[in-house]
Image 1 (cartoon, helix red, strand yellow):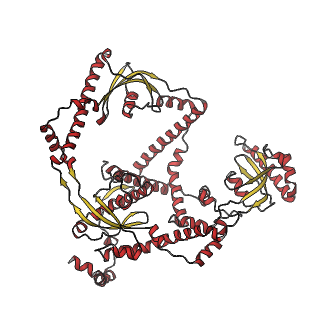
Image 2 (cartoon, helix red, strand yellow):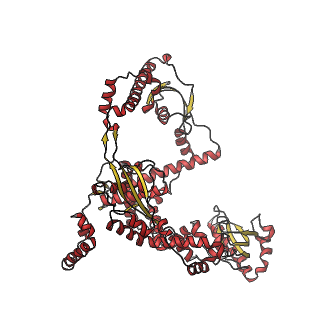
Image 3 (spheres, one colour):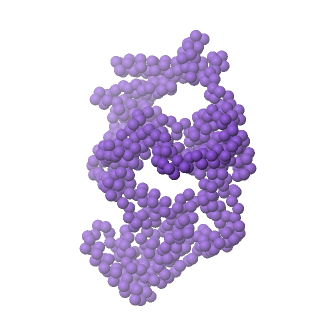
Length: 633
């Protein structure tokens, strides 16, 4: 019956349309009509976060991380801990949203404009008159799959949310005395000796016999299973595939060149300017700064009447020792060379024009532009390839949704082969053997997507060897695959894995013997330190300098009691064995010079600010009645 429905899918769709639409007309549509109730996993201020919300967000985050780090271990992304971390981020974002809304924290247009100017790629789109190249700005965002409206709304939202914790964390401060006390404790050094009892040194002492190996095999059968595997073929639709199918005509290329010629050059506009600087450090009183500003305004008013006297006045009045002698001349410079306040004005002035007073961190400036070097406009042929790439990138972004719909329809309506979608969309067929339900550590692309693997291993896919539905496997990436052959999971017999059983048994027992020997030595040495042997030469460790010691050994040394020295600690090294740590001395942190002391103060303030922010977030969680409905793994 299912096969019949697939073959006559269009007819069935029309029939369902005729049957369902009248019920909508006569009875209306409730929002829950199209959705199945999803359990609540968290609640913030009465607002629910559902299992579907969580699944979708984790899928998005996993796809983003895979795109940014193709070599990342896919199992890490799909672990219970990673999934719970996604839920915690969702709750945090929701808390910030509620707080920003109830505190009426908004981002003004002026603040948004300043933030945009701090993005180098956007700042470079400024025209000589200071206005933004709107077409270039839109094209830049289109290449990232965004519109100006969407990008600015997202940035405005992020800035508003940032104010919630920012208003607390940005007020953190500490005196040098307090920071020194805290950092001295944090950077404290300890002199230790270490005796290691390594598992590998006990391997020869492990008694191995068939009875012990078979008992180990029986109690660890899950270690000796061959996972189910499949040989699969699949196709991927991504922006690159859509891009490759786009054809451009010469007229479009020429039009784009005419509209964007000045933006296509690699050269930057350069300007030459003079300036008069009147120093006004922040330490000045408000009245003193106002007096300096008034003097600067008087100079500006005078020079606007007679710009030809600028160099003469600069020599007499400018307090910039580097340029005053040359009439305030700063030479040629491009965007990014000067402080933002100075640059913004300098690149809006006409040649020879004198500015109003400009305030910067250095004081008050009066600026005159004396020359402008316009960037050389490149020829059409020299930038033709770049134009083609730009236009294809833009069109691929716009066209992807349309092609994705075609892709999904073809793989569903012609489920017995991927060849139709390959022929229609010009895609490449990929094959892979040994594919399992869970992504392998080295897996990339579609095979690193748990959703895609789940689709491949459905009963219909395994039994009938049909195409999977189109599955989102990344940002602007879809895949469909089919199983060519399948091998179910099976328990390997003892004889098949005898060597592996022996190796694992010896490793396990070696670690047990090493731990027992280490614990016995610790007990003996604690009673009589004179019996200690096999200790390493004394070394000094700290959080900054571990001297190659395992983290667990350093942590044990730093956490050891210091009321009676020497003191002894035992440390498990896991499968590697066991270590006994003898703490000899507690040493103060190394003396810090003025520069390192300043860095330590900044580091302490950052840590203190983080702690303040974390404490405030916990307060907000209580205030907005945050509830987690699932347990932390």
